[in-house]
Amino acid sequence: MAHPALKTVLNLFFKPECPLCGRPAETEFCRYCQTQLLRCQFPEGGEFPGDVPVFVWGRYGGALKRAIAALKYDGNPQIARQLGCWLADGWLGTQETLPKNLTVVPIPLHPDKLKKRGFNQAELLARGFCELTGLSLKPHGLERVRDTEALHGLSSAERQKNLQNALRVGKDRPPRPNSVLILDDIYTTGATVNAALRAFKTHRIPVAGVVALATTNTPPPRQRSRPKSH
Ligand SMILES: [Zn+2]
Image 1: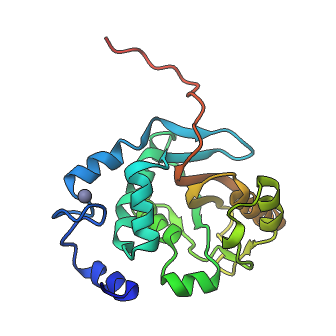
Image 2: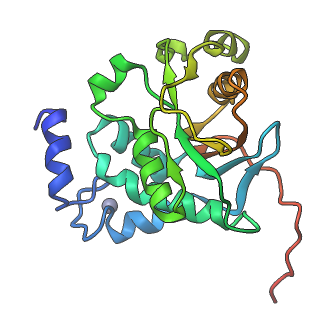
């Protein structure tokens, strides 16, 4: 088996097989897996109310969970672009007008983790997202000052406490008067997002919302009613 770093490089140039099932694939995923992935999308849009609106594309499970694992742990950074485009397409569907003056900032990895993985999956998703939306991207708008990866198993309150000062605004800050759209791969307790909100608040940088690819949470039903089809 190829070294993960070598596999990462090879996968940037060759896409002979689907990273989820090994079948031949003409695009990032084979047709079977693409169908499975699109079934993970929340049909009514995954909007979560809160201090800032949170939009999540799909349910973290099945093919989408496998795709995120393939991206993060199995050296397949090339699939982030397609996933980022789907996220953008879903999010645009929830916007009344095409938003302007928004800068996308991905949640960063700790430098040690970045070195080990070779890429930040949230940044790659953000590139796909910005390609479709035309929004500007600041990959280093935030930086992680604490490694918080070892937080699995902690309670929500403990995670929150550990994460509070884990992020700070980086040198690559969004230009005024732009607001920030925070982007992450998985949205769970909101602890990471809260740490990001806190960091931006310290610098009086407005945050317009959060977008994420997947969540285990169930979105509340949409407010706007749609005519029923017969
Ligand atoms: Zn496949």
